[in-house]
Length: 131
Image (cartoon, rainbow, N blue to C red; front, side, top):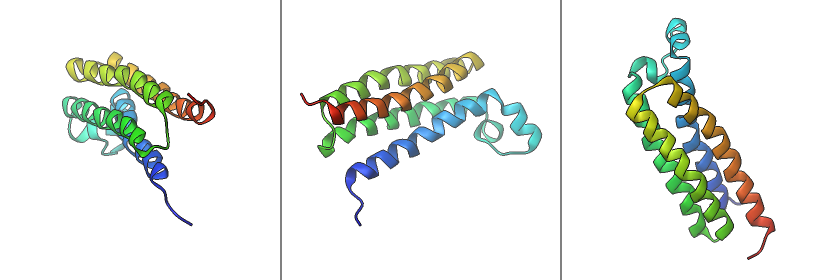
């Protein structure tokens, strides 16, 4: 009957992962969104602003995943894995921001899938392995 801090962190990770993931996807299919009249960020604000927001949310997401370590619910395996997974995410988002290319949008989108899977994999590994 309670809501503990680790659960809040896990919710926040998904919450902050969602925008860069779906904005990268929406860059790839923004023409479809525009044709359908769906006001996704790339349609209403443009590619440059969307790329900038992807970078900002990616930085916030990686910081959040690393801050989870301060809750004492996870250990060094998680912290190391989150850091190792976060660096390529920020790099992919930075490349997208610099280039605004569909290729970098695709790479960012695909890596965001690997990133979230990896975060939860290292979370499970950390919970089963004791250092």
